[in-house]
View 1: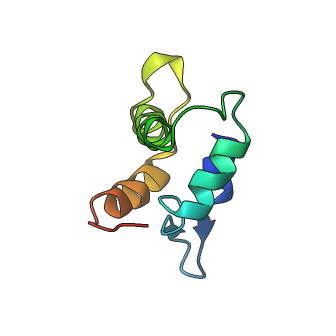
View 2: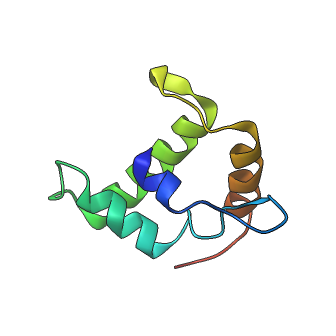
Length: 83
């Protein structure tokens, strides 16, 4: 979660900006923080996505994002973008 939080920011209007959370830079930093960096790139991308969505929902005993962070992240995840 620390990696994900590093890619969230708050603008002058006190709105959460999550535009960087679903980026190649966030993914690369997340991979660097993992013990298993030898998995295939495809497996790592899928695991990154599952980890982010599991944290959003608070599943597996994870501490979920704050409600305002969750809203901002969901808006970003719904965008159709390729790195």
